[in-house]
Image (tube, rainbow, N blue to C red; front, side, top):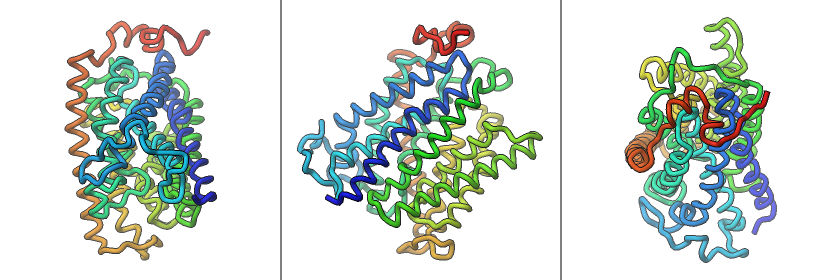
Length: 401
């Protein structure tokens, strides 16, 4: 066991959990209406608990155990055979389990942003449980667990495919099948507290250093570079999104700034361990333009109410960063270099994006159909329009004024 590496991954694990609780929970809660704040927090909180238990029972084994091309096995169900002395590389396997568990927590939590303010709490629980087993665990095995994409040499340092593509595609599917919020798009209320959203976004930014830097699984130069390029991408994306917002709307909104920040972070994630600072700058600027355009396209052209723009920001950002990994990793852009040609690597990246997007789309659709038949998806009109999900679903209120 390497004590320095172990110490760094211990810290990174805590940072990644901070991204969901309370980071993402507050980010999303500030962006919804005041009558749905508590319900949004509750969804993120219960997903963290459900994902933890599913990862312990079967998720980790399905993702990281076995040498199958498409699926792991269940030999390590309930972490069977993993002791205090077990190692994964040069860190304790218990720590690797926990580090990867925090990724399994935040990925379905990201999807919450697509269906807030109108979905049954019971549907969230059931969809999340099935999705982690049927979508997240197999895809993780493909990319990080020695599966077929790993054997092809796909580049996904910290989750552009595993986290952001799966979450983005699933968000779009669920939002479409669930239907739009009442009054969408004209009379949907603006965020009730950009202040709360900004606090959550700031926690996401800090936590992302554990997300990307920790994915080096060592306290080394690779982790340091991943942190640096992550920060540069977030900063440049924020400035660029603000400039676009300022130009189009006349004023630089705070919600736009923090949305741009998240776009930059999502986009740099798959490439963070392979590129240099200049690559981080490119991805940050590009992510703002591309994701900004997709926000309007999904809402106004495709007419899908992805409430908090999960697909446009996380899905599109993760895909863009994944597709550009091979190019920006080259020495020409200050990257760490690749073993194949740019085109050969990009073909592998395209295969990864297409295969994971298609698989996620199909399986998520099946899951949502099953849940809709079993318990239904949507809250009552009274709960959505008048009571709000805080009181209607949980019998509590976020604010007593």
